[in-house]
Image 1 (tube, rainbow, N blue to C red):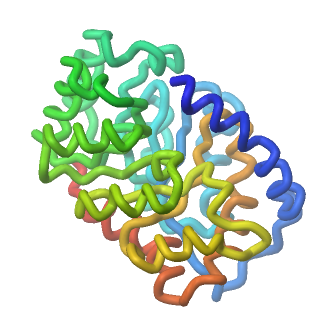
Image 2: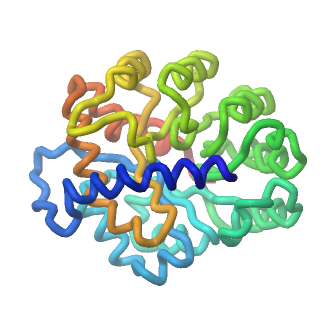
Length: 284
């Protein structure tokens, strides 16, 4: 858990610079020719619902030119509110957190299993996650039961994990489809190595400020994108309510660096990969 918080704190300066360069409030009206986007990492938790009501949240997503958004929330109510508001836009995932406090101890909390079973009996989902899971914790009974529930329903696993936990998830379920949140916060050469091991692993780029700057793609990341053009997708990660106001500026930032890639690769990372993976799953 410390891994994630330290990474986010170190990323604050980059986000401030990105926001200053592309102000959400100053975004121009989108041109019809702008690259559409699929945001593969969106949260709409209880405090976001209070700050940004569902209609406004959907308006922000549509104004940013999104074709789809992979949404989860703590608790699940936020996801269901957005689904009711925009079923054409929202692709729902079930997060194993009843509140934000569950992030720190969910892997040993049997109540999480009951929560997942109850929600899955009531609603339909495309994925499970985003969940935080590292190393040998993936072998604990609660995460293993979560994986089993996802397997029963054919759901995508959205894993905020290190490479070790990703390997363990695939050992539990060799045919799993795993979306690796933040590309594991790992170096691009290491990300490529994990992608080579697992043909059914995809990576989101949420909170990866190292992959592009000033509209230019980092050379090491370019190599990764060109080797695996069908395995990356963008993500904003609205992990706090205030980050909903970055949806538009993050979309503009994404279009800027995607324009530095060959057109077909930009389309795949910008929206086609999200559509192919997350729209291909029949909600269960």
